[in-house]
Image (tube, rainbow, N blue to C red):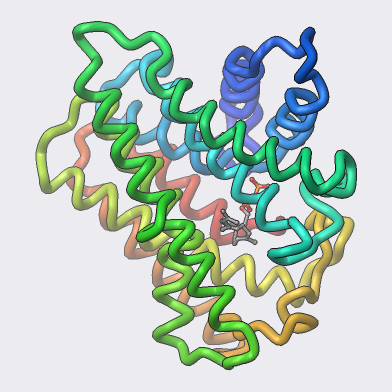
Length: 296
Ligand code: GRG
């Protein structure tokens, strides 16, 4: 039986084959740039955000082929954010997804441009296969993606993070930062999945957004726990980096036990959000539980 746990092979294969197809042909003068884009985009990862888009489309009766461009666009934005986050001017990390980070492999300028090019490719991809029937849905997905990844979304979270360094932010500020930095792209996946499947019901859209909000927070809390309990080999990136950079995290502010309790509470709240949907809730239930229990 196909498992929908954190490593659900079937969906990861579907998404990765679509991602590969959206990359530009590398047989040209820009081949180093395109190789750098492929290097990071195809380096693995849990593909959580596109899987959320797929599952929220499915629970609302949408076809995988119709939501796939938006799902891939989301993963491109996520990958660009990881490349830029690892740069020397940001976190200056040498490892990502178990491999040297982009600037270590290709140099800083190429890494910067590979991130930029993935960001712009995302907005081309979302319109791939657009026709008179789906044009409005595609445009709405693009608007959500821009809003949730931009200055009041993911990038907003990143600047709050940078400006919090050395200031020991209180819990409230950490929560606002994480809701934006980590939560926004997760919420975007849930919402885009609904919109791509033609959902207009405000109650369903609000429930999808709350589900994303809750698993986003649980996801970040588990990320903070793993940073102190896991190993570099298991995570594919350095552990203990939060403590080394003297960053406040949920673990440093609340302690591990309270973190585990809060992550479970958030996951239960996410599960309750699925009640308004008529389709099969099992895959989204299992995904929320797998994220809370993950080891990487
Ligand atoms: C620099 C533009 C810019 C944005 C940075 C999202 C972000 C903002 C930075 C990513 C760095 C980071 C550690 C964020 C917190 C948690 C997170 C998003 C982890 C990575 O996501 P996973 O676990 O990674 O889904 P995989 O590799 O599985 O895709």
